Image 1 (cartoon, helix red, strand yellow):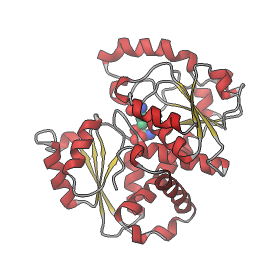
Image 2 (image 1 turned 30 degrees about the vertical axis):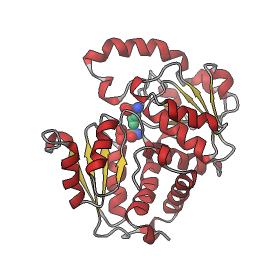
Image 3 (image 1 turned 45 degrees about the horizontal axis):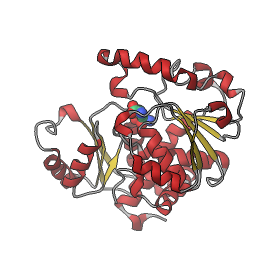
Length: 307
Ligand code: CP
Ligand code: NVA
């Protein structure tokens, strides 16, 4: 089973991974060494802190090995992605790839003879969303009946969060005045609406009043944030989205915990004060990436190993 987008994962698949992630977090010693002799190949076209390290350390703790491949240091760029992926899959038991474009991830998957995990592309970030469900479960002790408000730009993180929440029984309200174009996925939104758990509004203050979690992400994806050619668009977005910033004034109107996938751009989508507040669980979210990914790796490499 691949993990390219949560659209193809059933509610049971999602809940099983999340519950297992929590068990792994509480009893890491039970899973030590279970993936001895197995290899995860990690291919990155973009930068990463959390995804790279959480997968690498998680695989190590399970007894396996992770091989890091920086796109620019490979021959992926010279050849057909599909062909290079086929070769990579002869060395590894799972491939995790962070690709700029989802279409290239799909092409890579076509060539791979082993399961492929999406480590964040322009459209989806499924590993993040699974880890976020684990964080919600950990804080609230349940998923169903909780309410998440996502504020800011509709992007890859939002896509996966909306799918994850609506499949797991979590109510989610999107307060997103604009979509990051590559993330547009009307089919995903339609499926979310059909669950009855998804709402949209631009009234952030009303939305946060009964929120359990208030989530935001960068208004500008990582590959553009410091790109001088994107400076004008960055300024435009900063003006457009500033009313949706998670700041101290907004926190006074809600008891919600604050979530952020990180890296945070303080002064843009969230303030320093909010990131430093006790209600911000972003660092726990980052830690939980590792626990949930261990669950995913165990499910992909050896279902018979799961106890
Ligand atoms: N949240 C997340 O995926 O972080 P990185 O980009 O650092 O991997
Ligand atoms: N939307 C962000 C997510 C980072 C983990 C980006 O793509 O840069």
